[in-house]
Length: 78
Ligand code: F3S
Image 1 (tube, rainbow, N blue to C red):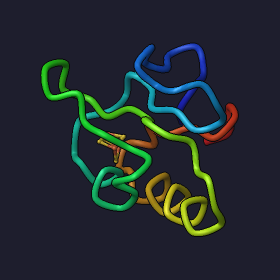
Image 2: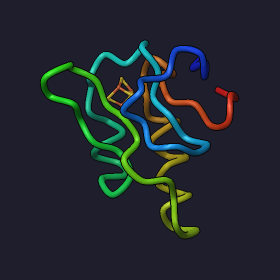
Image 3: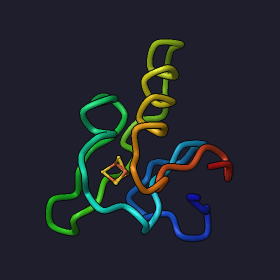
């Protein structure tokens, strides 16, 4: 379960975030490329843009569900 305390500083401010459990599997970036991106140097994903529409919200939710290690949080919930 993702926790706010462990979220990466690269995450843009807002409800979705990636925490330090990320194993860089890329699923979130593939599911929601407008909202998630990979920090190739550091080997983890982060949120670049919070969802701006219902469609993006759906994709972010899909990304969260697709993450195999539950490293994506939504306002502190897993
Ligand atoms: Fe990392 Fe999960 Fe995305 S492992 S790359 S946060 S799908």
